[in-house]
Structures are given as C-alpha cells and as structure tokens.
Image (cartoon, rainbow, N blue to C red; front, side):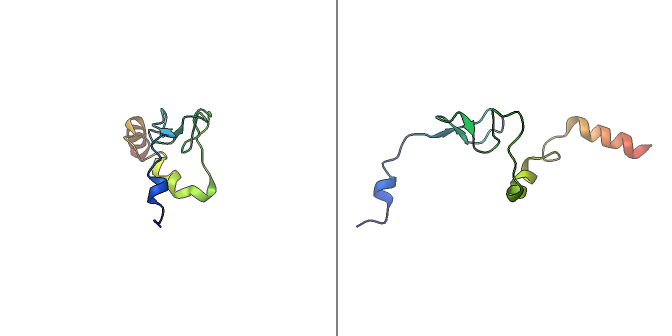
Length: 77
C-alpha cells in the first residue's frame, strides 16, 4: 500500500485562482471569495491570530508614493 500519493495524484482541478485585489492564488472559484483578503467584501480580511500575515501586507510594505513625501514634510517643520 502507498502512503497517499496515489489518491492525491488524481486531483488536477483548480479550486483557487489569482485574486484581483491581493494577487494571491486564493480566489475560490465556486465560493467566489478570496480566502486571503476576503474580496469582494469592502474591508480586508484580518484576524488577531494572523497578525504576522497582516504585517506583511499593511501600510509601509509597498512603495508609499505619497506617504514618503508626506512624512518628510511633517518632520521638517
């Protein structure tokens, strides 16, 4: 008897595709909902038990095109 590859190997249908909002492969095709960000909900999905995941995608992790300039302005004066 095999350990499990034989039954897992037959699965070749995609349940999740890329999400419009977060870009992760978490958009569930049947549920029409993102498992990562909660799209199409207006608010981003976040839980207290997943604070590390939240830290990876909050403000300050991207380019901060406007905020960089705004912060410089406040520290000068």
